[in-house]
Length: 480
Image (cartoon, one colour):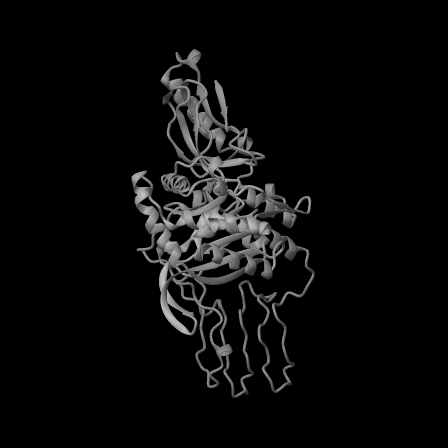
């Protein structure tokens, strides 16, 4: 038997999620035949068999996370080809049972790198967490909940949520929130108690008891919430603070939260959690940029290239980064150093059916415009067809996202860590522009620049946008 272990899928990749199996138990496979499609936090990769033989067992289901070096499949080699189908089926059944046993899964932690980092930051033992995701995968929510529970267990504070505001003899409101549980009651006594005493002229109650053994209907197991609508004061605070959750409709649709969409979501959540964002907005008139594209389009068509505005914007961004290298940096938190990148590899955020992907265009500053346009077209096309290799999704120094492609104007983009800035470009439209006391309609672009406030400040962002606007307004400056 050959135990096929998940190979090293790239620098910094510790695990991958099984998206699709292309073989089943009992299938004959050739050497280099694709066994499964595995997604890391950087790319989707086809995993191929290094040997020929028969698949005897699969050790992970779709949605499972498998660590690098962990056995993914068992393959019977040519020397074992005489084994009967019955024996093969029995081994597959045994493997399936073992795969679900405590002995086989002991020590396996199904969690992506971002979740592991969060657990370390919060001091949570990730191996003790029971994951709520598919196939027991541990999510950021699981880690945060565990951290909150641990903090609550060590708290010796009061049992009530909020104690009385005033004593019963006070003319003001008696209580805002009473105890959640009374020691003598089996169920929750009250979520919110009376706001005013019965002798008060104000509203009597915001929310009554959630559960009351005497009031509960015999055929209703859900908690009863009674909302008191009496309110003569028009005070929003007297409105209901608790409402019954609306039941799901039979027309609702569910689908697994996995793959590129989940990976992107986790990375964006990490970015928002760790990076203090600051976004600057601006607008620039670009009639000469439009004219330059119109002049170059026939030449691009002769070479079979679709010349969009994206490569023009990328060339302007690369030139601006040369003038403001602070925005082509990353923060090395372990060594507490700011690293200034010398290359101009720029990511192009691309919307796909499976979520956002950011292929990186290498050496933007060194390529001619038509060559750059061809590279952008190729990378975006492969990203949307899920044919992007891992190397094309890493190493960027700056990211550009074009919300204008779907009609957007301004945005609040999220930084692609470890980069320190991201630019969102809005739709190119005619907008009113004032010049020399006159207002005219000019083709304009809207710009939204988000920066990492730990490394950059508002002045850096403003200077960068000012220079970028100069290049966009007059692309011939690139020739200088």
